[in-house]
Amino acid sequence: MTNAIKAVEEEGLTVRLAAELYGIPKSTLYDRIRGNVQHGTKPGPVPYLTKEEEVILAKFLIKCSQIGFPRTVSEVLALVRQTIQSKGLSDVSISYGWWQKFCSRHSELSLRTAVPLSLSRAMATDNSVIQKYFDILEDTLKENSLFNNPTRIFNCDETGLPLNPKSLKVVSCRGAKNVSQITGEGKSQITVLACTCAAGVPLPPFVIFDRKTFNDQLMVGEIPGTLYGSSPNEWISRELFLYWFRKLFLTSVPRVRPLLLLMDGHSTHYGPDLIKIAAEEQILIFVLPPNTTHLTQPLDKGCFGPLKTAWKAVCHEFCTKNPGRVVTRYDFSVLFADAWRRSMTQRNIASGFEVTGICPFNRNAIKTGNDKQETISRSLLDQTGLAYIPLYSPDIKRTRDHDSSFNSSLLERSLSENDLSQAVTPMRRVMPIEFFLKTPSHPSSKSTLKPKSCGRVLTSVEFMTCIEEKERMKQEALKEKERKRIARLENQKEANRVKELKRSANFTMSEHRQFSKRFENGYDIPNERYELWVQLYRPNMTSQDSNAEDEDQDSLSNDTDEGEELSMSAANSIETQTHTVTANNSKGL
Image (tube, rainbow, N blue to C red):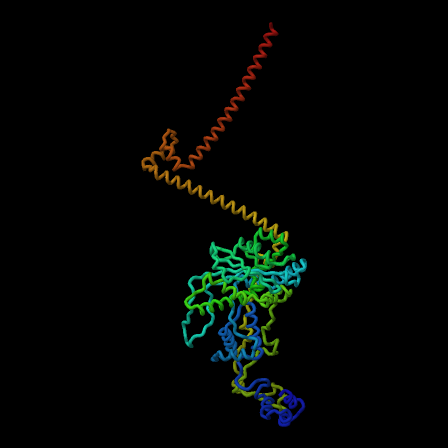
């Protein structure tokens, strides 16, 4: 079509000859040349958005999805409705069919169920934090000869497996509203600590029950080498993690040293004792950046998802094969062993380390979605050369003259005022689609006063010194807290004793008036009941009086000492005078 139009306009061929030469219907070519149909448009109604606007809209939707603010179909239709209303089409309704056609024209778009992501995690997934984390990780791997050495890189983390998992999709009759499945009562769960090697080999699991004593029936059908622990709240603690590190990890890993153990920085995972033992055993404990384990933790990326899916499947199969029974703790070991074998495969484990960029090392493996945003033009002028792309009405015919008058100046054409009033219509300001597309900023771009952690090695000398200082301050705080608690108990005990004495003394109103007046006037007549009243109702004054008495006693003792010194000096003076008088008398004689 383009070549045929050029042949007519530039080379001077007739419309009939050009149509026959390029195999185009004569009427079709004639309409393009005369301007009845704009070149490049498709037959049929004018689309709501142009191709350029659809491309901008598709990029906008993808960008919003990448930074954690995806749009729903109804929101997209509302944006399109606002755009076409600014073009003068106010009574147009956008249906779901338009969305389906739009997706067919842009195959990169698809509907997905969004996974909830907390604000703290969204703010932590900053590209600078991830790159700094990879810098520290790369230095650690190269300094200890662990770079791309999968047999010496490990990752550990815990997850919870509920005894009543969510049901899978089941088959039922069409139109059924309440499809139920019989399950057990309660919300109990079993915690499992898993550890895997980058080579694709898992260590035996560490299973934590919420009970103090163990029954042999709990271990029927277990995975060989499984370690067990107990916790009152079903979760791991610092003591349990240290127990697992000593009993299972150190006895299962290769004897070659050093080794790298990656884990999150939760307080239940490490302490001074663990760091000291790990340093002695040449185990490098590397803590991942906080709130980024959904991106940097190999177990979260490759194993825990399949594990929970397999756990739901085996629980559903158990309830189907055993009608009337529910999953209990005594069924956990045999069911968990089946789910463990299905999910903890070499492929899943190795892919977890690969997609996180740990082994093989790849600092570009993690996409945070908040990299430098693409520059989207705020005007179609930069892309199309037009201030706006007009919508052509099928009722208006645009003709193009090819005679000699076509090249004449528009100023030479005369139109009457009536013709001008009929031809000129008020123009609406057409807003480009970018005006309605407001891309939100990623939460991580907001500045915070607190510096972001980018991962650290716990077994380094600096961190060991820091953790020892923190532990010392923690112990001092605990001692101070205990001292305050004891003082508070003693004060409460003293208050209860005074209250009991007041109740047993049972002073009358006349006694209160009598003793109050006596106390104000300063009478000091011995009386046991008065002394008890002063002790109970004037304890502060009593303590002040005792302090004053102590001060008086001290001053009296000081005065006595001074008096004794003066007496001694006076006696010495008299004795000296006596000796002088005696000597004079002797001279006179």
